[in-house]
Image 1 (tube, helix red, strand yellow):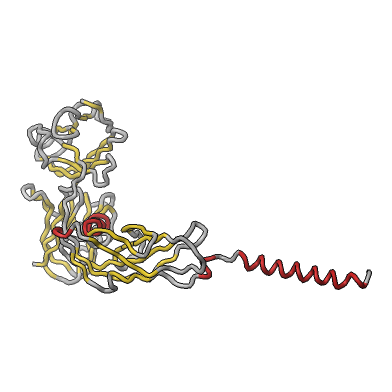
Image 2 (tube, rainbow, N blue to C red; image 1 turned 135 degrees about the vertical axis):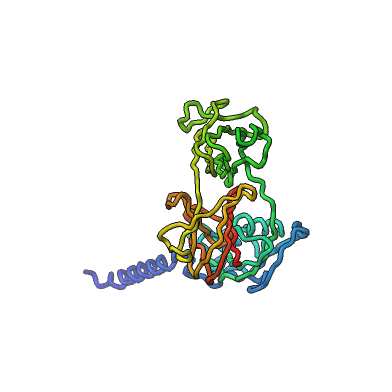
Length: 348
């Protein structure tokens, strides 16, 4: 080899190595160079907020310091809220902003608390709030440290879509708003519990308080037909009625409700029967309980049971056990005549 070529080859080798190093430094993950997370500055961590209907149009403003990703980027911030202690498993997005503040209203904040998080009205509850900062899909979302707020939402009336249930038990009156079932998710799927006082009750469904659009079941096969035959129930009792107007199907189930759980006299082995009050339109029971847990169960079986996810006094099918903190004599009511099923527990 020509000795005079060695310096040239060495120079080329050093240049190549230098290029590799620069190339390696050129494309690190931007998230790894994060310099500062956003910090919520208002509302203040630990503050209490009582919302009032009279202030619905007032501003509700969230402010924060900007995130610093270590490079210039347009950042989108989402303000998320969740029930305290849930670790933001199902966060609710209050709004988004490309700046360092979100201008919402008391009404929008209250609606998110009362309807989406299902917090009780006129009662203080703890929530958490955080920021989710993102720049593009290739960079991990950056979250602020959450703050805790004690909020008291006000009750609002939610108008759910409803289906009328006229029948022989109420004079075949489609305008009777006491005999309706609801679509709690506004998805054309309706459900409700209605008391049929007589055996072999007949009924139909109408869209609105008239017979203009009505549905029955020709042949009793679970399929609804426009202007179809009367639907027939069995023995008198409280029936769960379900209708899917998307595919025109329906079903009914006679239910008898009971209380079960480690707090009840027979534990998880068998139900304590509840009594239906047709005047108050609720199931009720008074009994001695010990510290433990309870649930509501229909027909002495786990096929239809109700618990309380989030312990907000609204019930969900297959929901969480409801705690009983102390032993004592209790009166417990189960209310099923509305879109969202609820219950009350009173220590006597």
